[in-house]
Structure formats: C-alpha cells, structure tokens
Length: 250
Image 1 (cartoon, one colour):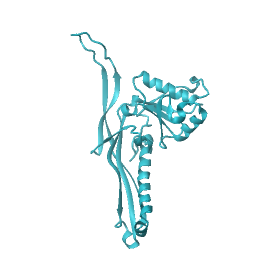
Image 2 (cartoon, rainbow, N blue to C red; image 1 turned 30 degrees about the horizontal axis):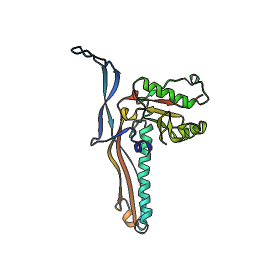
Image 3 (cartoon, helix red, strand yellow; image 1 turned 180 degrees about the vertical axis):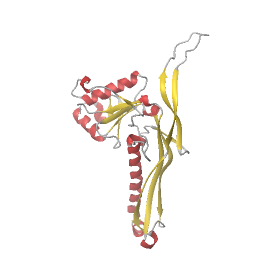
Image 4 (tube, rainbow, N blue to C red; image 1 turned 45 degrees about the vertical axis):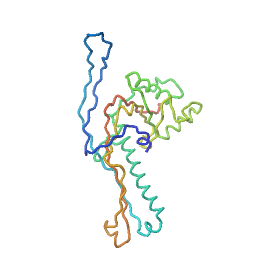
C-alpha cells in the first residue's frame, strides 16, 4: 500500500459516513507589497461545496477450527493476508476508483486532476517519458504547486530505470522528487502532484479482522469465518495540484 504508507495524500481520521469539503475552483493570487496605510489587494479564490462518501472495503474466508487451534502461525498468516488484501484494494480505489456504485472516486478520475496536455511530438528526446515528467513538474511549479511525489505503475518505473540507468532515478528519485510505485496505477499513466496539499484520505475505520464460528453452518463443521474490512473516503480539494495522464509516447 505505497500511497498510504508514504502518506500521499494526507491521512486524517473521520467519524462521519460522508465528508463534506470545499473543492477549490479558482485561485487568482493578488498578494502584493503594501505601503503603510495603503489598501490591501483582494485575491480571487472560489470554492465549490462537495460531498464524498465513506466506503467499506471488505472480504472474508473460512478456516477450520483445527487449523486455528493447531497451527496458530498459519492462522496468523491468514489474518495478515486478509489485512493485506483489504489494503491492496484500498490503494487501487484511491488511485483509480471510478465513483460508480460502492467505488471511491480516485485520484485518476478526470475531475480530480489536470490533464498535462503535452503533445508527444513536442518532447523531442529518446527519453520521452523522463522529459514528459520533467515538463509536468515545471508546469505545476509555474502555477505555484511544488510536487512532492510522482505516482507510477511499477512496470513503467522499471522500464524508465532500464532506459536511463545512469541517472539518480535508480535510487527512487526522479528530478529530485520521490517516485511512489503503486499497483493501483494503470500502466502507461502517471500523476505528478503536490499530493499533501491537494488531496486527503479520510479513515473512518482502520482494518479490522474478526472471527466467528456462528456464521452459516460453521458450528457443525468446525469452521471459523475470518472477515476483514476497512472504511475510508477520499477528497481532492485542489485538482490543480495534481497533473498527469498518458505516459507512453507515440
């Protein structure tokens, strides 16, 4: 769960079933120097009030009572795998949830980031993926957002390292910015962003693993149901702080 492990976006607790938040629509910064007694300039900042639901991610499996009693290490491993499965799915949802049904609306949803709009023909380099990312970093900086991470699929990052193995990117850094690899990111896509400024993960409930022998016919069959679940929401307050899209040159 690279995204949450790296605290990208920021993670906050919540006690609500839905998060009401303000999404920045426009920001015109008119801050300026003012002489003593002079009128202060007004900046133009507009917001839209949004609501994002908290969703539940869960799964379950069954193990035998004998396994739980006789092989506690294996039973503990199963519990770990259940936790891992929930967190892996949560990462996928944070990245690419489509907002339909019980899905989160992820970072790669078209409403949550700014498409880079850079034509591949304009890159003019064999190392086009690196050049594209560098240009997007500059675009963000030019609008006042300092990127704190580059979000990539592990396969794309491996290809880029192989392509340009002589640079510092082999250390997990691209142009001085940490690369966060996530299976939740589709291949040939990327995001560069000021993630801690632009988005928030809201934890309603961390992963909870529970066991029951009362489920269905568990009691008569000496089975135990193991269930793991987590509740969380995602809000993107500043879509302009995230920029990305297609990574593959054509």
